[in-house]
Length: 496
Image: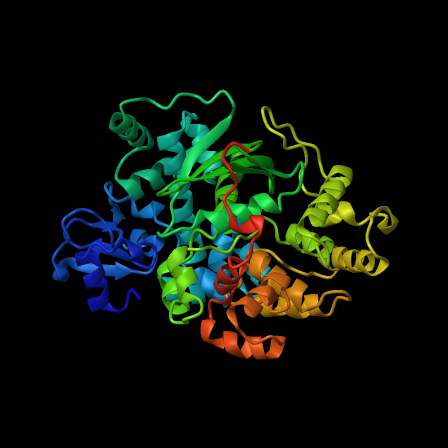
């Protein structure tokens, strides 16, 4: 979009926040870059230039606007709509792969050479993987500087910088302020200095594009919560996280204009990874205006879209975890699936401590399940075999269900596994891989909704009818599920 000059100018002049994250406005006279929705007086069109990423604007010598904070804008929804090399690379960079494994590690995850990845990213985004990762480190550093009382040295390494000098230079270059000046400025704005949190946790806000319907999003997560791994407590969804350098606990609560997030981590180097996983879980980088506009064109879906605009697809923080849970949930009720998953976590998950809460375990990794005795599971033999072959595929055969996976390749691999039918494959594609066009046509809730709305009854006919919902069929599923009476559709009581 950044190449459509007239359209970008119109968005900036109307201060249209819907385009935040789609492109960035650089002001040639002041050498700053802004969100399209910046509340400041728009510059003259001849003084505007547009970039596809914050990293590209920073590389061109522009610094972040202190008023609209473009570095904290929601991520571009484009990376969640596509499964090509650039989109997969962007999801992995946001997940912290470059910080942990470098550009060679990113390239290896993608199955391409480092040179090819660099060339593709520069061609589309105006910046290479190192610059894009640097921009993310700067955003994480600013978050920690302004919202925590961590010493600056701890902030530097938690944000992913290799040295304090690089941290100081980057913050000064990107924000035109030193780290200490950033913290002082933020403290002055709220009339207080951030106090150390004795619990060792960090509170932050996760922005999203409005509207957002929290009912189905948090309702689904709460209704399917695995005992000991997830819980709904006093209006907040809480769960344990398995992270590269340790583990963590996250608490997420919907607010009118943001998601309140509190993270407790055993290693602060996992901060950006944890934030990325939380955003992915709640589908916060979606473009609800575009999704709702298309689905509203269907007269059968329009009333449901109007009633609850901004529905998101509830995802997962760990693709392998969801695939295991999908097998446990085959042909059983939600309550039965939760019970089975809870028993599996209690027997094989690593214990964690949760002061004041009810979380006790990490969900077991595939490697922890390699020695699982299938006879210990209260499931039919065929489903036990399916679980065993899934674990082998995840640990030995290279099945990748992470955020940067190749959607179609993963689908093919899953389809080849015995016991993985269309429902299981599409459920994993929708909630683990994040494919916005995934469509579990054989799902019971989808079938019941089709009957209620007068949609075609057979899977083949319903797939043909649902072609009008592409590329947002996963979002259409959320509205179809909403036609039924199920706890996944309702935000739980805050007192629960």
